[in-house]
Length: 146
Image (tube, rainbow, N blue to C red; front, top):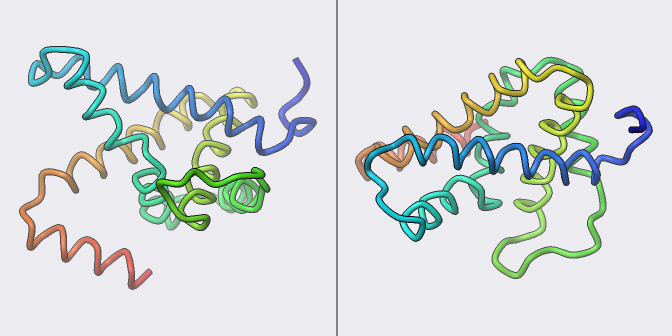
């Protein structure tokens, strides 16, 4: 396996995407609220879609180290060649940045930090989803201010 620095941010993101998806699925199957794979899939989409991952990046950025912010920048600036039709280019780039960060941390053996960030991002999205509508509006306004 080549060293992480020898790989492109796109390859970090490829791995990070899978790592994040596994984490989300593990969390959801341990929740007794979901009874079948259809429900699990619909719920997982809320956490893994580009918009959710971009929100995680914006939420966590103040808590990242300088190196992690640089990895986010590299992942965000990675040209992918296409943008899925269900999102815009900026959102997609931030979601790729999130996946890149996770993949890089994994490849460099910093799996505890990777888990910490994933858990914090997942908890943020989960809390955001359970907030009453007026509180969700406040959360959105706080994100816009940053």
